Image (cartoon, rainbow, N blue to C red; front, top):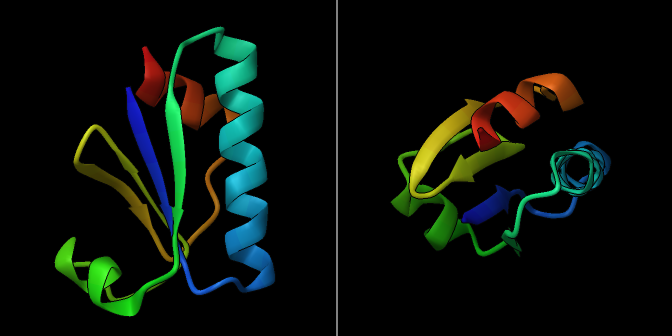
Length: 76
């Protein structure tokens, strides 16, 4: 499983990264988690608001923080 947290490094983007790590730990799944801060790479996903979370190439959320429970659903 591949998870990308897209964002330039703002506090909400850092919080999104922490939520993803918590959800992965709780779900007990094996996942590669990557923080993407390059604006061109972020735009390549069609994302123009941050934070955004991409799971296995699918954009799951843009511009808002999901709950840990929502992220766990995406992981199952």
